[in-house]
Image (cartoon, rainbow, N blue to C red):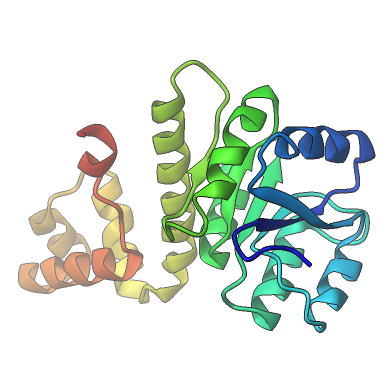
Length: 216
């Protein structure tokens, strides 16, 4: 039996050599125990029907039978409070946004991931803060912010389907540098109506405040 003080970790990774390298790192922390290991997502998902209760699940973004994102989605359906960490060798805005949407953490594979992964795992029981991390240069903090912003912009693009035809027309003209007065003349609208379309469109899109990513 594992002590309640230990952090139980499941690894879902089809690269055996990388799996072993993660295990070597985690084995150095006496508070962490490898609970179970999987090479395909299906076996991991099936085990969630059992009393299987890991504290943290490290999930590779590409598995032999499904994507890591799909694996995490299915895991969240079965166990909404499960703590998932998506691992990727090639971080990109799309998968970062998907990770945020699922509620999974996101970290880039590589030597420096191994330096951080123990800290991320051991904060699980004491903190519910998300650990969205990408490390691919010396400017770690800046890279994290860029990736976070990219993820937010991916969400904005998805929200474009929520816009009405008039709101979309107004934004396209605004993109061209047209003033609200000029847009009103072009679209044969009242200037107040144009202003309302812009305001409502921005609310639907949920455009992030860029200052949040520039100023500490």
